[in-house]
Image 1 (tube, rainbow, N blue to C red):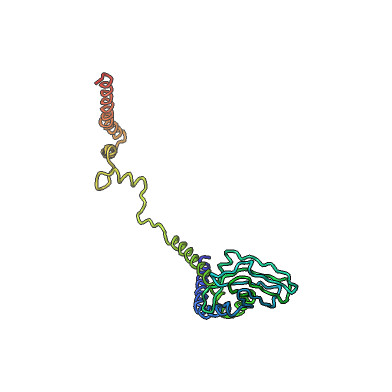
Image 2 (image 1 turned 45 degrees about the vertical axis):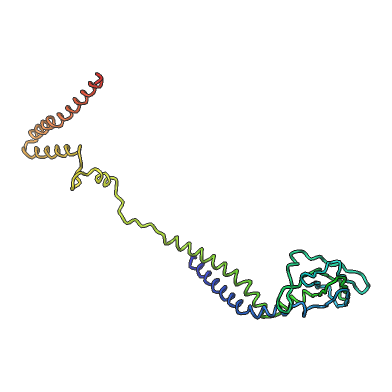
Length: 275
């Protein structure tokens, strides 16, 4: 599963690189064609000077935008549209965001600002009237957009730009996720030293000799066991051996216990007497 994810990330990376290279290769030519097709001075339906009127054939399924030079905008009420019967057609106001969609001139500079848009109810000849003090141009936006999409170079450049960069971002995120998973798998805890048992820790902490012999108070008990073993080897008669062992224990072990008891009793008496 992880190798499959890595394979898909590689494919997305390769595809995004190819699309971006195509966009870079077609950017210059597509930009020139876009400027040529959107140039207001060459691709307008009608140009009207101040106080001038003009007739033009319009279609009902299209939108018509009136533009003027930046800084010389014509007010909406200064642009009139009439049908053949002389009835006025009310246009649609341009929002602030739509006004930022400026149109280029022949050099590519965005100097034409939208003023108002019109939509007609039928195919016929209509009359535009410019009552302002500046020149205006009437544009067929649908025709301009159709000419842009129908051009192969522009279409290829737009598709490669729209898909190449988003796929590149997705590929970068995919590489980051794969790298994080690989880095987590590589981090393993290795115990190089053997863990000691409780008995080993006790012996190491309490050892007093190089041979790790058990410290006091167990040393005396070991000596007693050795002595008892030696006594048992002296005689062949079990009763004699038993008697010697009993005598040895009474003399050594018993005397040591008695001494301890006596010492503790003495300490108690001294404490009781306030000493």
